[in-house]
Image 1: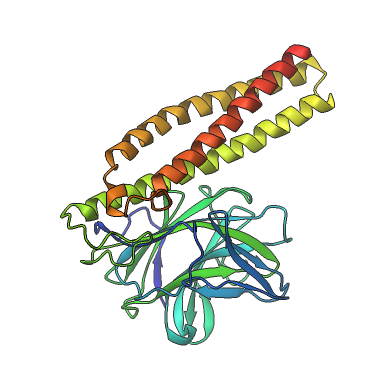
Image 2: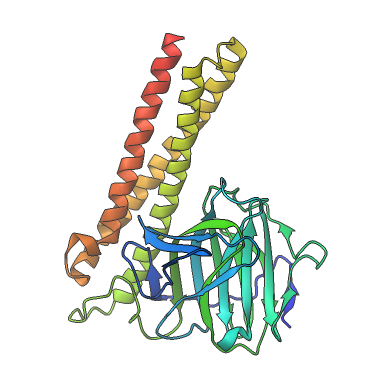
Length: 344
């Protein structure tokens, strides 16, 4: 069984500078299980891998069909639990899974802003966090509530493992017996979750399993560095999009509240105005971050040539359009809020 360390010092200091796998779920892929039956609805749709576990008694594991197992690497994945489904939903990432599920780790989140790490040992689950009494669950201040995306990051080298949630380091553990393994998703009973993206960075010499594929006719000694920059830009863009979507939901609630007349009292209106100002300040800060990302995107223009030059392969352009659409929704909602306030 792995030994753990919850101190503040990370164990993995290696640099992972090559992108060996990526999936933004823009197109269907045979690497991920899709099915529809009485137990599961698993589908790739609208840039997400949607996993709905209808079975209410047992969890379900999805092992990704990668061409090769992972070893020393950095994995970054974004997922969110559906806040409107299930009484006790849980979901997470499978990492270093061994043949016939004889070993491996499960990094899971629930809607209570808790996380847990379990290891499969001799066919049984062992808790690396928490206790058997609380099911291994531990409070996680950096975790987002259900309905919001959480970025899970695992770094491993030489049998050491560091875990981060939303860029905050949480725990380290050591397991020297796993030289390589598979990755995947675990979804708890009566749960619906959505996987936004998965990226794997390594110290290895290849980038052969990048999705979208690099043009094999392009010989560019800096392509590895460019792909790393591209991947990091996509992760940041998707984070921006998810944040803007959440802002839109909050703005919609504020508009709906004003329309219903629930905020006729002056004190409530002042409170709402303060909330609106706070949201507008956050949007202004994000605009500055977006401008920086756009600048980075422009610097990566030659990536389009590397991927064949068609729009479908230009993930940055696709995400930028999505980002623009969410910003336009923000502006319309803000304008409607101002109009409703004047009408009051």
